[in-house]
Amino acid sequence: MTVQITPTIVKFCHQVWQLQANVQLVQQNNGTHYVVTDVTPFHPVSHIWPDHPSDKGSITLANGQQLDVTGCQVGAIELATGALYVGQDIPVKRETDGWIFVVVHCIDTETMIEVNDSVQLNVDKDYQQALSRGHSAGHLSYLALNKVLADGYWRKEADRRDPHGYYDFNSYAQVSSFVTEDKCVDTYRLGKTIRKRGLNSADMLADLSQIEQKVNELLVKWLSLGSPIEVHCEGERLTDSRYWRCDLNEGQTAEIACGGTHVGSLADFSHITVEFNQIDDQHIEMYTRSEAV
Image (cartoon, rainbow, N blue to C red; front, side, top):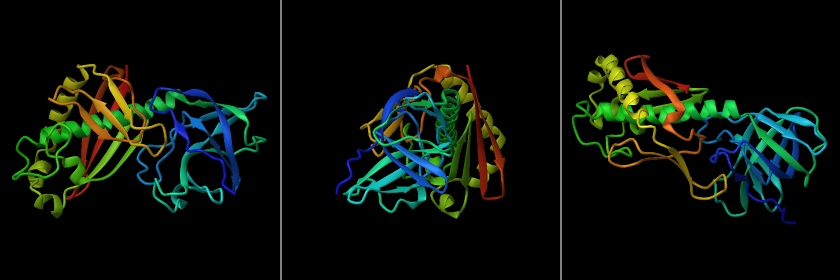
């Protein structure tokens, strides 16, 4: 029998923090209740690239009971069996026939919530916005770093270019990226591969303090524009592509594929600063810190 469950419609890209939803599935796993609704304002942590933590918040039942949502994960449901797989247990890629992807709200307390219940979903707005600032700031800082490095730190043409047309150091060298409240930490590897692609990594390491200064100066310039930030969605489902967009006066609007949450404008920041830390002769970290107006 086919299970009548639909892919979750997501609203976390639209500055929505509270809405009514219908419960489609409730499942218990080792003391945690998994709750799937037809629509949600909650952003789940990605099981593929977990750079952006999940939202927190609560679910309010019809009787007024409020349940804490301790986290959100991506789930996949096999329609033929109704089996739910969560996070790293998901065995298929998105758009696989016979499967749908959903947002799984995690509740660690006992609950009488049932399928077909109408509930109110409440995202912790302050927490989500702090993560959004951290994530948008991370995009801005790596675009700034790409531009600064394009001025003299590449000895030959690089194939990859960023949205502004500069050599995409971030794409080549990024090992990991992790967003927290008002912060983003990017780790880069300056190994043999990127040197072969043309980066003068020794010069970059020698000039790291000057590069840091130039990146920070560029971030001040960009923030002064006050440009809007848009998340363009190609559909309402969790698996539909989403793109971060912002005009930084660099000749063309920056567009970055991204599934996270973001602020609505550069004017939401009072400042963004970066700091570089050399871990060893092949790795550096870029610490991006932001603050709300």
